[in-house]
Amino acid sequence: MNDAILCPKCSRNDMIQKISGMQNQRFTFPDLPSPPEYSCFEIIVSVFVFGIPFWIAFACALSGNSDSGFGWLAIIVIVGILSVRGYIYSAQKKQYEEALQWQTSAKHKLDQLYYCGREDIVFDPYDGTSAPARKWQDYVSV
Ligand SMILES: [Zn+2]
Image (cartoon, rainbow, N blue to C red; front, side):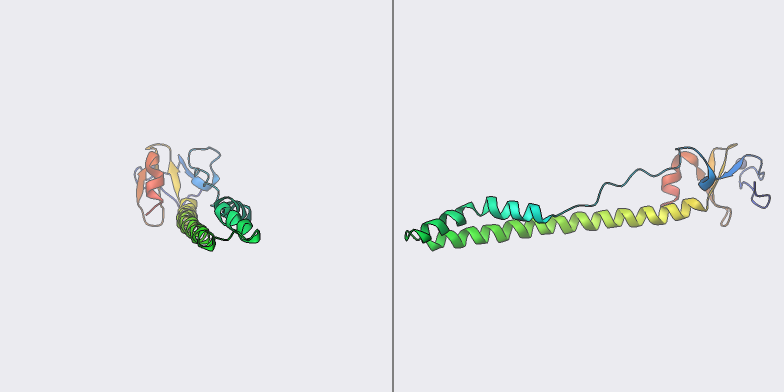
């Protein structure tokens, strides 16, 4: 127990604990979802599947039965699908990185906080602010 640190509400230190040293699950962050993936496998599968009209046109061209307009249309469809998928991927990645960044800074803030069991609050001994313990996630977000 650090004698220099006092609870801002009760001005005592007999029931305070540094949150980073507490052995309970109350002040833990939820696991982040895994980062989005856009794999080579997915690209290959989508080119293969959505390229079926192209492969048909290609086979027809080989057998001298050409309709190349069909093949070009297939290429445009493939490029369009890959572009949309790439756009969705970058949006998900951005969202993931923002969540990661938030959690990193929130964890850093949480490490500086203390808990007082008398009022059930979390507080920052350096700026004297506090919040109800049940709102700790909002408190570390600012
Ligand atoms: Zn207190």
